Amino acid sequence: MPKTRVVVVDDSALVRSILSEIINKQADMECVGAAADPLIAREMIRNLNPDVITLDVEMPKMDGIDFLSRLMRLRPMPVVMVSTLTERGAEVTLKALELGAVDFVAKPKIGVADGIRQLAADITDKIRIAARAHIKRAAAAPAPGAPATAPPPPPTNIGRLSTEKIIFIGASTGGTEATKDVLVNLPADCPAVCITQHMPPGFTASYAQRLDGLCKIRVSEARDGERILPGHCYIAPGGKHFSVERSGANYIARVQDGEPVNRHKPSVEVLFNSAARVVGQNALGIMLTGMGADGAKAMRTMKDAGAYNLVQDEATCVVFGMPREAIAAGAADEVLPLGQIAPRLIERLRSTAGFSMNRV
Picture (cartoon, helix red, strand yellow):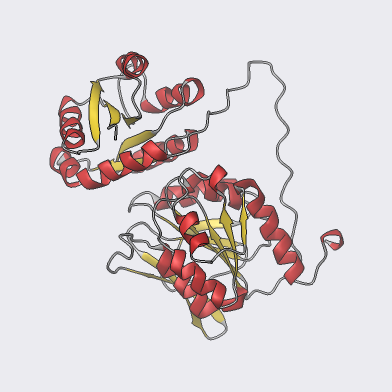
């Protein structure tokens, strides 16, 4: 079995050395080059043809985002970002994921060397996942003076709906952009949306804020004890489990610490099990791109409780792990390309609300 060939790009000689050492200790991968800046990296990529690169966000001569943008247009390949645990780091990392990076590792601001060594298993796992990911070429920027493409039509309203209904979404690798694709196509009057996206602490607040500026519905990090309301989306905070409970006539968010479930915190399993237990046939489940099996069994439990479940298809997934496992568990009512999930969701909501497509 050939080893995964990795090029490390980081302006810190210490970080380059540690990442190279971590990668070379793995039986299934090797660091074939380490570059101090994107200009050197460009030559290395051309000459060494690596399978994956790790890329620092902030570097001299050309920052990681500019380099990534050019790379994904001209020579798309799997990229794992190495970012800092800061607000600025979170915003830049989300931009990198938007541009096509597969995943990211967040290094601490202080004690970087020890911090990276402690993240060795996480880093190498993400390199393995990236090596198998489906990478798409980024769209080229329009030429100066070219006519702008027409904006997508605004989401149409759904109409009168039971406030009992809740949409539940689970996602991991590749999920930040897949989830955005679903949410921006939902109208302001859609049911509440609850999301568990595998992300570390410090990144979900920036992610929710970014989505809130793009969507018709309001998007925020879930807060323990708050009411779950239609027209709102709640995202599991990094490092905490998120579930839904009943309080009298209302649904409320439960955000708690606890042991990882399926190695994850937040875990999709926790959210989806609460959907089955508390929301039952009024739940709609969506499983998006991601590695592993987190949430698959619980999604089947949702289906058995009467929920209707949509699962992203292999062709449009960055990583077809969680969706594959959900399908294998018999949890899927429909398997759809990413671009069809929001329209089908709206259609399903209208039909169950007693509306036909041409009456709304």
